[in-house]
Each structure stands twice: as C-alpha cells, then as structure tokens.
Image (cartoon, rainbow, N blue to C red; front, top):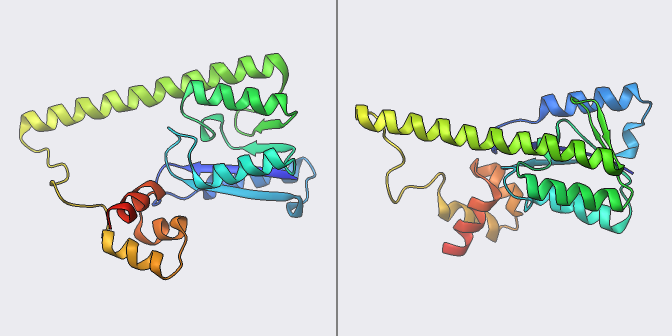
Length: 192
C-alpha cells in the first residue's frame, strides 16, 4: 500500500494544496487512487506525536505500507534529530520515501544524507520564525500595543471538549469541532 502523508500546523489550515500535488504525482506515475491510504494531520511538526502520523507509523510497522509520499520533507518533521531517526528507521525497513515538491526519493546512504540536510534546513527555518515572532512581540510591547491572550482565557471552551467526549467523539474530531489542536483537547479533558 502507498501512504500519502500531509500535515498543516493548525486545525484552521487546510491540506488541500498538498493533497492536490500528491494526487498529481500519483496520477503521473500511474498509481491507482484505490492503492493509496491518506494520513492528514492538523498540528505542528515539532513533535512526532500526532494522531495520523502515529497511525502511519503503526501501518509501516505492520508491513502494510511500503511507500510514503509526502508534499515536502518538513511535513514529516520540523526537528532534525526526529526526522533523521525516523528516515533512518524507514530506510532500514526498506520503506521508499517520495518527496513530491523537492522531486526526491529517499533510500540508502545518499538518501539519508540528503534528508538530513533538508531536515536541518527545516529546523533552522523553524528557529528563525520563532526569533522573528519574538522580535515582533518585543517591538509591540515597547509600543504598548501587544495584547497577547489574557490569563485564564482559552482557545476554545474546555467544557465543550468534555461534553463532546462524553458523546463518544474522538480527540481528533473534537479538535476539528473546536478549532484547536489535539493536544489542546487532551489538556482540556485532563483539566475537565
């Protein structure tokens, strides 16, 4: 089976453009859509603990996935150490990794080296973005216009998460309904 993996950073974002590019690649390479299992996460790539990514890992470990197609390498991980470890593990399992926009197939020693370089660049960009954000916050604070979120406020209503869980909804479904990440939902459920 072919796994198509997409990731966006927040529940409000859509993976439509990633899906379209991967579908275009699959069609150009003669793959049948019925051979593809889609895995789409809506949370940060800072950690590998993402619902759909964990499902993908389970399918890889069970041997049902032989090829992983993703839009860009940083969709798998934004951290160099996690990404290199992940790709090394997949290469040892003879998993073919195709990165559509960067037009590369990863496998073997050269593939792992190239992946390490690309993941390193993704991690640098993540750090630069954080630095730019902090610099912007400092300027806004000096001007007296930085608001931030008031203490004790939430991205969504924690009681609503508890209510939806009691109705049998899964964490990913609750996150989508509330417009938050799965981690935020889990935090609300622990507190509620």
